[in-house]
Amino acid sequence: MNKNLIIGSLFFISSIFLVVDVEARLLPRFRSRGVSRGKVSSGLSVLPRLRSDRKALIVTFNNLQKVKNATYTLIYQTNGKDEGVSGMVDSSSGNSLTRELLFGTCSSGVCRYHVNISKMRLEILSELPSGRKSIKRFRVKI
Image (cartoon, rainbow, N blue to C red; front, side, top):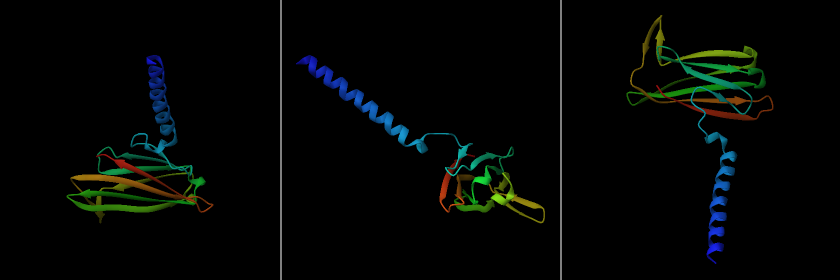
């Protein structure tokens, strides 16, 4: 009887680990892949990285020929106020394209950069030629 209890307990514990392993394979989007890389499920490859002076985010789009267009939105807080920038790239731009998203505003060649930036996130919405849409979100740490 004691032997059956031990075998039953081992079976129960091993089945818990098996279920956790299966669930981990079912939900790969929750695995930590880092902030610097991402592949939108449409085949579009997105590589965001901070500029060396940390006053802009450089976003490189690859495999643009696989999507109809891609819309990007960068949102962050500066001194408790929401700020951001958005734009669109399409497949007519070529296979690869880079955008520099400044953390601030520029006018007449004079740039004023935002300070105390927090809660930065980048969202890429891509549309396939079939009309299907895909979204990828990045959290950026300054």
